[in-house]
Image (cartoon, rainbow, N blue to C red; front, side, top):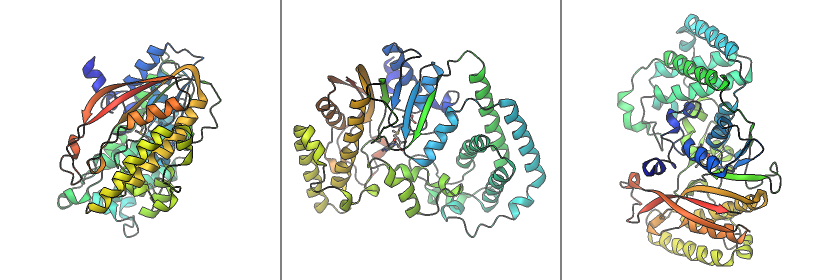
Length: 428
Ligand SMILES: C[S@@+](CC[C@H](N)C(=O)[O-])C[C@H]1O[C@@H](n2cnc3c(N)ncnc32)[C@H](O)[C@@H]1O
């Protein structure tokens, strides 16, 4: 059990589960965590589960499997699409199989001619760095064919999720987590056939749909709101029984960068600036790449925090001031002070929305990590728990899931502070 718990904050188990595995989202968590918390809370078909940071849809998919209604918010436009596809279990699989067969037939007929016609001179420069010209032409040709030959938007989205997987599988660049590193393998670019990978993935995904449509699974309504959870107007006051969620960690991780390859490939964005306005600016601040000092309020932290939680405000200001001093001393001049202020300004609004929507007697489970920019430890879980208490929650407890931070060992910003991932349970 303890070993299982240590994996709750990771996507490892979800990578092997039907539907959950459609998209590898390393920022995601284990569906088992959601199942366990729903079981412990004794929810039924009249209950409501909320996830203000739905991500790739783990909470919604897990609740749907168990027959429990849910609602989730996700502000990242690409990740929203993934969650939308994973929550749509009503696609007719017979029709879908026909569409896939027809597509496979067309692709076999039109390739490689279609690929040869693809113009690589206008694609964002990241793409040719990640693939051989031949593979990239094939990928773009296949996607063109999807768009030209498939009319049902739900089918196109299904193909988009499958193609997203193929993009990573056939890349010769270091496209792993967290960042794409084309330079790593640039000299070893190899041709990898895209079509067999795509068809194999589509097949696996249809089998998953067969499985969930098989009758033994609950299939409750799972609503996805494509938007910002700082305002959850779609959720009624005191209507939520259980929140299971995981916010971005305050670890300077840029979510927009994770999906840069995909967004460029599908034409959802064409430049860094485009991705900033479409993604970075829409999310709670958790990275220095998202923050602009001029958009922070005077004093950096918003006055709502001072008014509602004066002690937390004071402690946060101490940390922010210390980070401002470090910034002047350190070479990189990272705006961690702004990042921390922006993070808590956003998290405060979301906690206030949770206080409004969670019923008395309900509870929340937030999986999160602490952090230590410039070696200054930030006990995120304590700040979040203390703000929640000031907003009307009754109590909170913290359980450590695992220690983490090893992957930053070689990072120039490294520090000796032991970091951890925990789950805080906050009762209303
Ligand atoms: C740690 S991930 C959650 C992953 C999710 N538990 C899963 O298993 O897929 C945090 C998510 O919050 C999203 N997010 C950040 N700011 C948001 C906001 N203001 N409103 C809604 N979602 C937001 C990010 O795009 C990211 O997908």
